[in-house]
Image 1: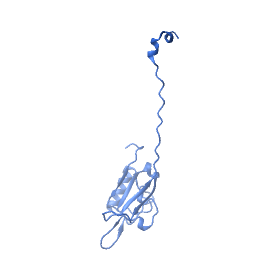
Image 2 (image 1 turned 135 degrees about the vertical axis):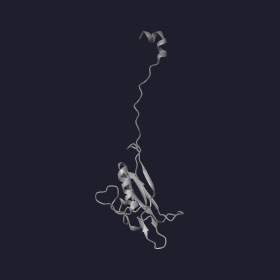
Image 3 (image 1 turned 180 degrees about the horizontal axis):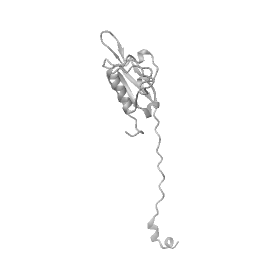
Image 4 (image 1 turned 120 degrees about the vertical axis):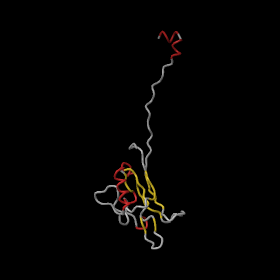
Length: 143
């Protein structure tokens, strides 16, 4: 993809990435839980494709981090993520889960606030065309 285009991937990855390590730039310091095998695969995918996991980049309260509650023991996990290309990660102002959203699923809505600016492309002004029909007039032709 061209760098001028934004690539955002959102979804249920069933992966626990946990907190990012100092050497990793794809996972922020505010993840939830311990990393599992799928989390390692997601981190490798983000590293290979130049993406960042936005959910883990912002300090939030615990209830704003988890995205799924396990039935039965009520353990909370962060398994739904929003990924964005590294060139555009500065446009993300905030990313968190919304536990009060009314939707027919056992997952919790994840939302990101993104600030994009649209710039008007200024096209160069075309030069005026000559009216060749005026050359048929003898006075203008002699000038």
